[in-house]
Image 1 (cartoon, rainbow, N blue to C red):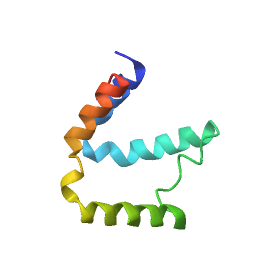
Image 2 (tube, one colour):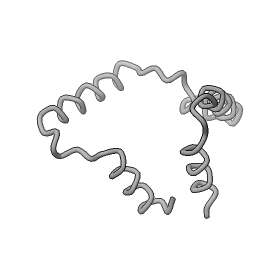
Image 3 (cartoon, helix red, strand yellow):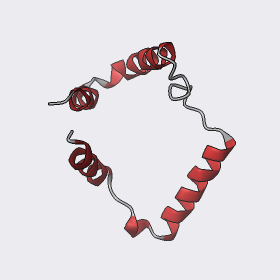
Image 4 (tube, rainbow, N blue to C red):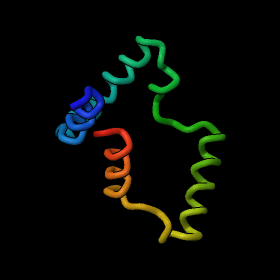
Amino acid sequence: MSNRAQIFYLLENIPDELLDELKNWLQDFMSKHGLSDIADDGSFNDQEKRELIRRWEKYLEKPGESMSLEQLKDRMRKKHGI
């Protein structure tokens, strides 16, 4: 099993009460390694908000074309071997 697959497995099985602590640690880790643009505070800038609105409106137009979370997970597992 790849490192990425092991990490995703651990993430899927971590207790909910530890998620905030893990998120904070990951943000610090990413910032330490110069990846702070990825490890932001979770807020969205105006461009991201517009994109989310556009996607939500697209979903509302044709909700039957969207996929479930399980379908997305299956697709990611197949594509990335996790």
